[in-house]
Image 1 (cartoon, rainbow, N blue to C red):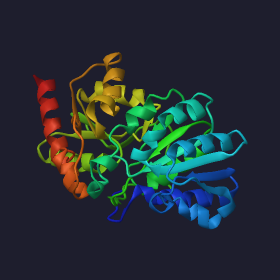
Image 2 (cartoon, rainbow, N blue to C red; image 1 turned 120 degrees about the vertical axis):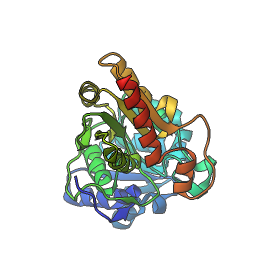
Image 3 (cartoon, one colour; image 1 turned 90 degrees about the vertical axis):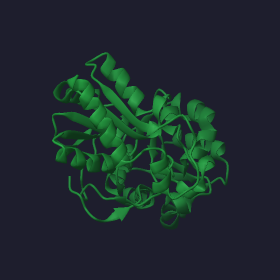
Image 4 (cartoon, rainbow, N blue to C red; image 1 turned 60 degrees about the vertical axis):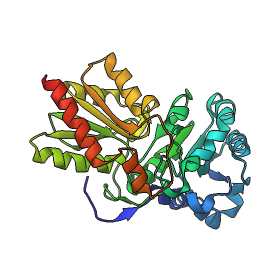
Length: 317
């Protein structure tokens, strides 16, 4: 892992990665779109393979049903829209993709509250919970554009349903080109024995910045990137609990239904330790720049630092 000054949005990975995969012959792709191909970047696939690209207009339920039908013909199907809009199609996702375990990959951009100026109606804060409730889906959120490309490729080659959340803001690039992504395996980005900071998506870089602040205070924080939320790397969580004795989970999602809840459940039956949670409280967002909205929600490096201080104090009590 290396920290690079370049920035890019994770959504930028979708179109170019699909074009490269189809060109390579590694998979037989078709793409379905709900009139947002420019924003999700799936339109780049349309430009290269117009006969393999199908747009259904503003009709997410139809998009999912069409994707399921195409998958029955043997194609690997990618369907893309905004995260908040794919929530409209939950019944179709359950009946037409999850239950028959079809080879459909949903890649939804503009996840979380970091859509910023679009306001609460366009901010998906429930998507991880919804897709994690579908028994056959794998669920992933990349921390940067490099991991997004690797995750999309892994999903394309992995049979069965997937949900990948990508984002709108340009984020620091954390990984070097060619870095591997392993399904269901956490990435340890920093060593530490006093507390473990667990994060995914844009909160990974913020957890790394929090770890720098904590180190100056004499608290050595391990940082885990849980890019795959389902299947969850319970082994990495248990090892972190045993070796550091305290956990902070930081995520851009509702607190009571996201990774924090899943991690707490996993550790309750394996190795309970003091835990703190930095997540969206029980409220909807508002309009503002993406970093302003994250600040309002407490999804900041300082928020992670304060949670780490609390959990370490509880561990030592």
